[in-house]
Image 1: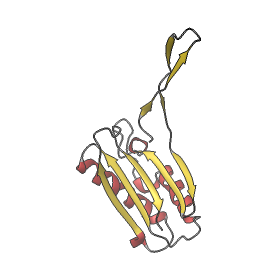
Image 2: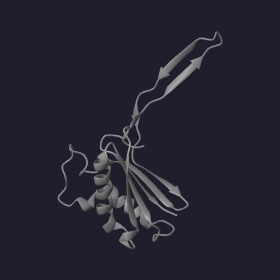
Image 3: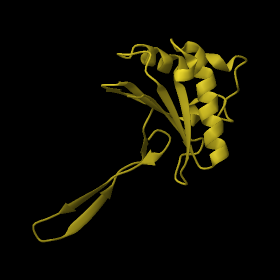
Image 4: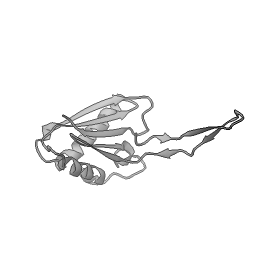
Length: 141
């Protein structure tokens, strides 16, 4: 999931039975898109939105967040652009998750074709969620 730091451990055994572990450097997963039969699934860190990252100044018009405009463009190219869309925000607290889901839905709605009521939001709480939360946007069946 974007926003978390991952690492890996390689465990090697020699012919004498000695074992050695090699710990890899930490890395982060950036925003990504998966193509599914229902349409694209997009995932990104809440920190990538100016309104969610205190280190980034908020723009005068939050509806022009380039990441969400690109997400809307991919969703508009789905096989059935009238299909319902689910925005799932995951954060460490319910308030943060609900705020993130509402913010994403509000910003992306003007850029989607079709009925705005097809946009659904869900908030999930996970104690191991990245700071700033994360978002998954997917077309439903």
